[in-house]
Length: 158
Image 1 (tube, helix red, strand yellow):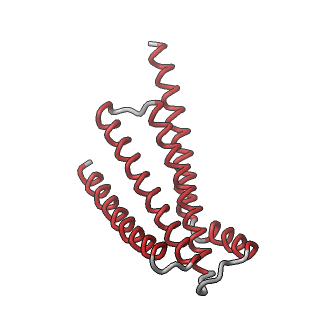
Image 2 (cartoon, one colour):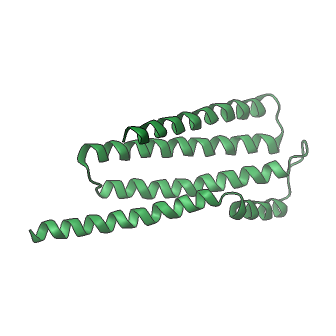
Image 3 (cartoon, helix red, strand yellow):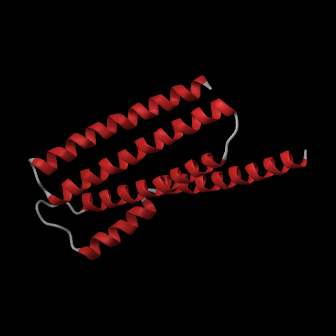
């Protein structure tokens, strides 16, 4: 368990470092060097890192609850599903950021149709890890919910 906690803190520090770097870049491009595509790209990347930090906080809560009771409860199912939804948000933010990055050519704002086609391409091909993680968390929450139901049936039987 010590190795997992160490790895958790290293990853959370890495995400926090990325959050700080993209936050400074987003602030710089929004306030001083306003280019619409670049500013939106860095803002979306910043939102993506905020979501990842939020996932880290949820995982920390889940870890503390598990260490305290040794079991998962119905609130844990809610937290795991929330991680799945936030993973989908991360995939959307990253795909939109990549779409804006591909259309960066100075001060022009991209047309709607190429941006949307690029978004769907990036969503499917550039962020499959986030989508797989979201699917994994939804499946895990179903397993946890089923295990809680079986546990409560066994306790009522005894």
